[in-house]
Length: 168
Image (cartoon, rainbow, N blue to C red; front, top):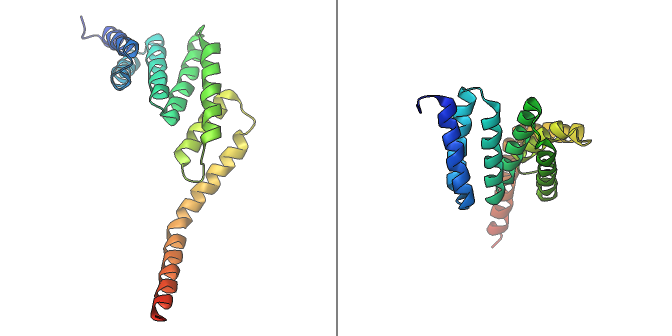
């Protein structure tokens, strides 16, 4: 009976819900991820929606907002595909996560955060999408140029320190 991905997916989502009620977020992530994987194999959208929703909640509870943003963005896409009645609430949650992320964002150091924000902006039709895409391109370009420039500046700094030390 449990050899079928659909039934097994439903069981894993049920287990994830039990762990959510206990606020055992690590186990929620493990069980929901397994339920998501199996529901994808079974090509069933509703169990995917439930699993991704649980993942997003667990990531929020654990303070992993980049993962929560990605999961919630995926949830919106699945909800649109299935005409899910919870779509409005899911959009509100995505907007909340998005606002938290934009306030806490340090784009200069975390391009994966900016990538997650860009994905959410696509789903939300956010006006900053093009600006953030350009920012990501600039950061990516800087990252490819940065190692050599950083090594040169460190070498110059070491020479400066060496020159100062030689004076003593």
